[in-house]
Length: 169
Image (tube, rainbow, N blue to C red; front, side):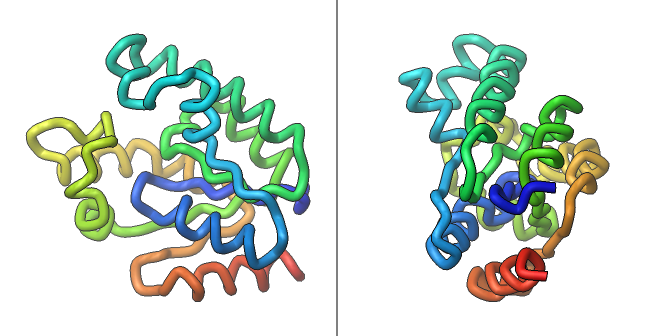
């Protein structure tokens, strides 16, 4: 396990980006968002990548981005919700960082994301049903971590403090 990088995994809307930025600032690490890294390198939005080239293409560039990012140190890495779908990515995360899974209930995730237009996997007629289905399918992948924190009833600062206590052990 490499504590020189901390990776946040979990479903969209669990707080990876918000918590990651504050955590990085508090411990003096750089913050790296895998999706932002991809947007910069591709020159287009995640939504456009999904529409123009499909999910499989996106997952390929996501894997490449993760490997490049993990070459660095002293980073808090916010991953996309589906990054853990590939065994190669899960292995790279566990070997190259301290992995923290952020969790939230489907109802809270829906509440946090209901007004967001930039979520290609939630564009259907029943987004709350989609959230439940995807969470069910991905649960086992989010369970591969060094620690997990439920973000439903905690403030961002409380989650950050819990993570800091654990990495300082």
